[in-house]
Image 1 (cartoon, rainbow, N blue to C red):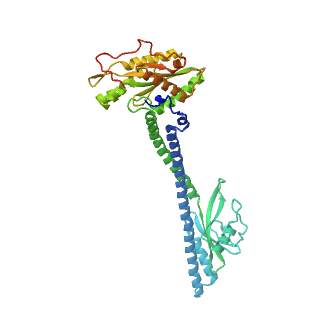
Image 2 (tube, one colour; image 1 turned 30 degrees about the vertical axis):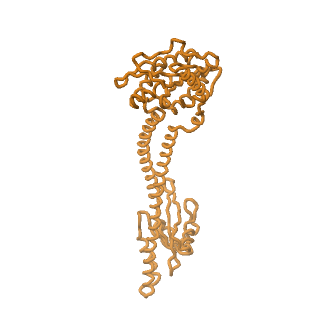
Image 3 (cartoon, rainbow, N blue to C red; image 1 turned 135 degrees about the horizontal axis):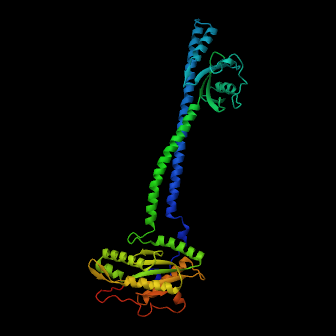
Length: 420
């Protein structure tokens, strides 16, 4: 026998303090959703950043073209083909024709902030734009002049207020024009990029929702299947030890709250090893399944029945009225299991020894202590001759007994009754 020989059973309290397997699966599902959302939003932001980077690079490409145009006219001035004034007018005319990405254009101003060209604000040409501010109070021309002095490949952001009062962002890059005291800039609205970002985020979220819902559906099916099997014995479909421990903890809590009694039955099959040795493991498995059915039929549908492994079973009976009621249930189990069996045409016999421990409302017992009491009672039942029950509560009162003399069930004479 297992720990019954010492009358001890290891406490399982720490098991219930751990996170259950089902909870871990649900946490994994929550993490999956979090990951999908994070990936979707990040990918949309990355896509937006890529497009914005391309636009910024495009501004500098345009500036390269604008500067080459100006340099070509400066060369003509150097050769005497044009006056400098005519060359400057020609350059501004060429620049005014430059359009890109629909809303992009080239503009220019002097280092003294006199506007030379701005297709978007022609009324300001010839005026100082040093103190000109955008919709949020920034001074874009001052920032562009500072950027041009560094000859950096960065950009300056500014905002316009649209008719509907919303802000429209535009970005500009600037370069100094060698030989002339000019700053040439290229400007582009990026509202389409921001709109694309919003569309990308919505598209990614829609993808996340579809993938997530499908994955959730599969995960729920998996979780349901796992939860149905992880706490059950694969052979008998009864609860296994883990499932039984969880049920036991819940049953004890309910019994204490309702101040009702609860009985724990630990059951060992007598003669199971001989059946296994004589008829093989297949016959042993068949016997275990038959015993499981009989034990279930001997108790109420609301009682929890488990197989701990091998030939060890357990039952939780809640709401019993007295210890005598628990003993009657144990007697029913002993009688049901002791009926003869027919396996593959061979008659075999098997009986049961039962240890009982009762948790009463007036004397509540911890779970591990209840197991220890039932295990100790089972040990005495086995030592007393098997095929009987012993109540630990009766032992404490000095009234240990078998199921009243004569209540013990003997196997039929024509059935070999192997003994463990």
